[in-house]
Length: 216
Ligand SMILES: [Zn+2]
Image (tube, rainbow, N blue to C red; front, side):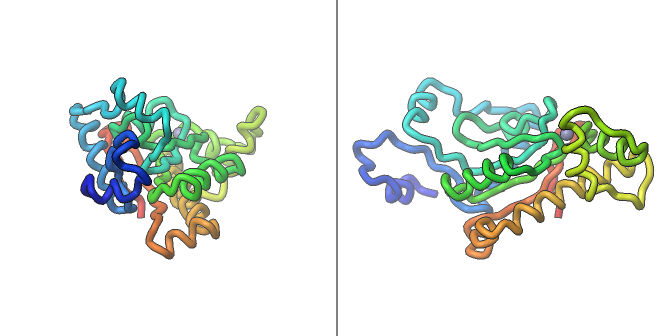
């Protein structure tokens, strides 16, 4: 997008602080995430958008270009693995990317109120939440406190055609598909998808390679 096109969006471009261009379509947003992950996995991070000027600019508002719904796992922080900075991503994180009303409301806020064109559901290799859910399902054990809720949300994704570590790994992918499908079926989001203003995509981060790849 050119600076000129971007200025059309601002009521008074001459007086307003210059907003940096941001990806405006689902395709542009995906390309930006993809480019950032390429930098990350090649150890060529730019750590963009952290300067004093950016911090000052962001006082007056935010225009993130993607919602990333990821796991709480400390090894998969979206801003790092996509090499993004302040104001770039709206991140929503829950164990195993599990949905509840607060998570749904948070994703909806980003899409409907901030007009974000891309939602990515990001699972990851060696997800402890999925592993715990599979283990509880196999043993019949009840997990402590609210962890049981998380396990119950993951349970429909369990891939019973496989055993052991393969079952856990397949369930990680199936959970991303399940959450993606549920989000895409939300009426307000579905309407935006139909209009071409939003994409809801699934992806997985591999700890081994630090690569994010799409899950169809
Ligand atoms: Zn996890």
